[in-house]
Amino acid sequence: MDDSSHLASPAQPTATRPLLGQTILVVEDSRYACDAIRQMCLHSGARIRRADCLKSARRHLQIYRPSVILVDMGLPDGSGAELIAELVEATPRIGAILGMSGDDRTQSTALEAGADGFLAKPLKSLAYFQTSILERLPRDRRPNSLHAVRDEVIIPDPMAYQDDMAHIADVLAGPNDHRTLDYAAQFLRGVAQDADDAVLADAARKLATSRAEGTPVTALAAQVAGIVQSRLEQREAI
Image 1 (spheres, rainbow, N blue to C red):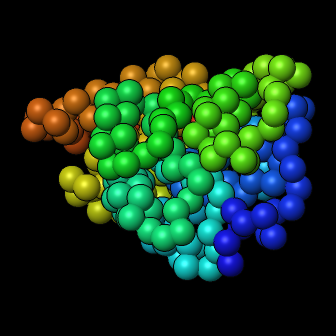
Image 2: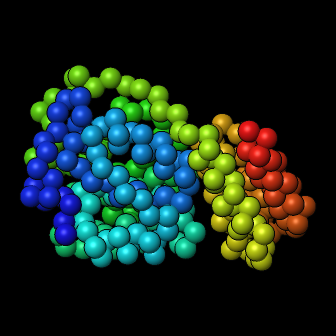
C-alpha cells in the first residue's frame, strides 16, 4: 500500500493544516524526540507512524509507503544514512526523505546519502518543522499559501524523557562493550540536549570524547549510569 497516493490520502492541505493528507514515518529511538514530532504532526494535520530502529523501519516499509520519512542519523542498529541510501534507490520514491540529528556534523552524511533535507534537533519550532517538510515535497502536495501558519513552541511530555532514561538504563545494564557505550553516549547526549538536561548532556559528551580518544571510560560510564538512575528515581518520586 502506498500512503502517499491520492487514493490513499484524498485530504488536501490547507494554510492552517499544511501537512493534511501526509503520512510521516519517523525513524527515531528517542520517545522524547518522537513526542515532539507527534505533537507537530497533530498540529499540522499529518498522520504519524514510528519505528525505533532500522529493522523496524524496513518492516514498516514492506507494508506501506509513507509520503514523508524522517530518519534519525544515530540508531541502535546502525546509521540512518544506510536507510536513506536504500530509500533513494527505491521505486516508487517517497515524496520527502529527511535526515535528522542533534549533531550538525551528520548533516553532510545525510545529504551525501541522498536525503532531500535535514532537520536539526531539538525540534521545538512548529514553523521550522512544517517548512522543512513542505519545501521538499512535490509541488502538487503543498498548500497554495502558508501565510496563515503561526509558529508555536512544542514541549514534549516529560514522561517520554523518563521512558528514554528507562531504555538506556536497560542498555547500560547489559554488557558494556564499545558499541554499547558509543550508542549510549550518542543517545543520551542527543536526548539530554533536547530536554535541556545540561548535567547529563555534559557527562554523555565526556564519555563520547573518552571513547573517541581511547582513554579509560569505566569511571565515566559509571557516572553516566548514576545520573540516569537519578532521573529514574525522580519519576518514582512523582
